[in-house]
Image (cartoon, rainbow, N blue to C red; front, side, top):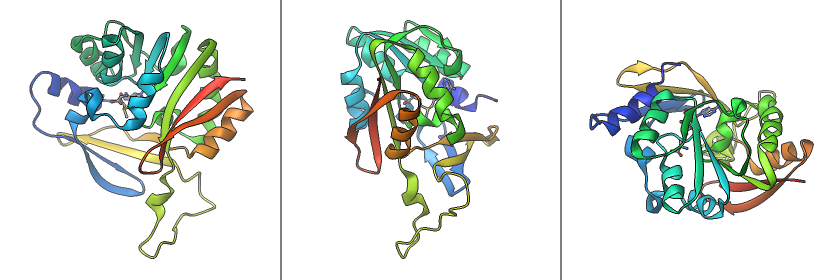
Length: 233
Ligand SMILES: C[S@@+](CC[C@H](N)C(=O)[O-])C[C@H]1O[C@@H](n2cnc3c(N)ncnc32)[C@H](O)[C@@H]1O
């Protein structure tokens, strides 16, 4: 990984913001990811994220913290937060913005336990593919203190396969429709291709059942997105 995402965050933090990140997937064309959005304050966050932050309690783990926007809000509200991300650049930015406990770490390497595990901005993305969901959920469950919760958002991207006549062009023999190859370009450089998973609520719910997690639909967004709360059964 070249960490172009981290580089973009660092550029913005250092006052060198000249262009945005360009993303695309195997089923969609170029899209702009505005870097200022990755530095959003509470009032600019989607309702699902605001709800998750309001529900977060106790010792909190912010997984894939990016520039640390969620962690900063929680800290400002006197919460105890640990923020982790695989991007070195992201962790450097989060630390410089004031996140007190930020570490470069992948979720599967985390071993502390928490009352709330927060995974936001299509949190299921870090599972990468359907076959890895159980492994990640089992690990996340182990990170929970008694009475703990995982707050995670995602969306059903079936709409991305809809054609102009309202039909779907999904290949039913292909992989699960939320499994995407994700490409990122920044300042003309291409990041190594990544896998990124969108999970519809029912599929997440079924996966939770198999690992002994209860899955509750907390809130639905405006565009097939939702926030779920997972707790140990
Ligand atoms: C879509 S960004 C969201 C960033 C931030 N949560 C936000 O809402 O602005 C996903 C983040 O997850 C991080 N990430 C991806 N896989 C990860 C993993 N296995 N463990 C920890 N962080 C991961 C990426 O580096 C990236 O910063």
